[in-house]
Image 1 (cartoon, rainbow, N blue to C red):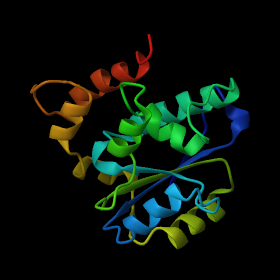
Image 2: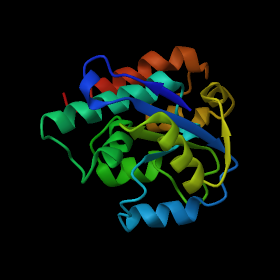
Image 3: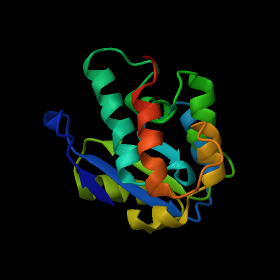
Length: 175
């Protein structure tokens, strides 16, 4: 697990991100989210659609900004993070594409705030999978889906070249 501080919102607390591989309880986690289980206060993201940690932190930053300005489009910061990954404001589509599904095997778990060791233990207790370093995101990309969802066409599938296009699409959403 890695922890980061948002430069624009240092008082909001650290952002904790953990990557799980070979997740076996995705259907249970998804059902708990649908039931709005308060003990599962995380953004659960399909890791195959995340290019690198910066990509996820951009969504977190936008979600915290919306929270600070009372402009959340969803019921909490966690679902807002998932929605902010999308290049458009179709909430249902964003949650379906970028959030956890019953078939998700690689999961990025994000928590805003909290003490690192407690957050990590809670993540491990809730997600049945192998906790791996965030650097393993590089091995999990679904380039075809990323190109499709961000409407990048069939250009070369180099994640480092795609990152500016993906983050630009996220940043320009709603303008």
